[in-house]
Length: 166
Ligand code: SF4
Ligand code: SF4
Image (tube, rainbow, N blue to C red; front, side):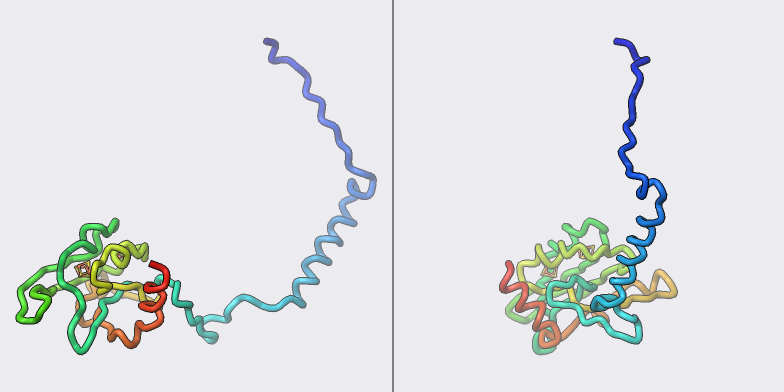
């Protein structure tokens, strides 16, 4: 096969289009019309964003009557693609028999995928609506139980959302 075949390109622009000016004014007019449409951008941080229940913010541990729901099965830690979760189990006198004596999430590693939430058999770890995270060191980004435990009442919307969509 010959590769010297001539490619013919047909230019079918009208004279006005070849002048470009009408098209430029058409573009400017489209931009001008946008000024009268409702604004969808938030003037953050002055304007706060209140995420819907489907939002996946930082993962937290659900606390009920002062006790974490977690039974330290370790499934979340095993499924986490970022290897961000560390759980150490211990025995307890409570009915659940096991609890996490240590539960840490490295928030620098976390990619907010929600796999830990999906896999948890106790609905003990859920994605919250918190998204404002800032650290000044790697150590600060490691959240222990003190920062992870959140009362179930505060997570009502997310827990309800999970009930409906699971
Ligand atoms: S949200 Fe994803 S990355 Fe973050 S701790 Fe859970 S499983 Fe790991
Ligand atoms: S949070 Fe859930 S999956 Fe993770 S160790 Fe606790 S009970 Fe198991």
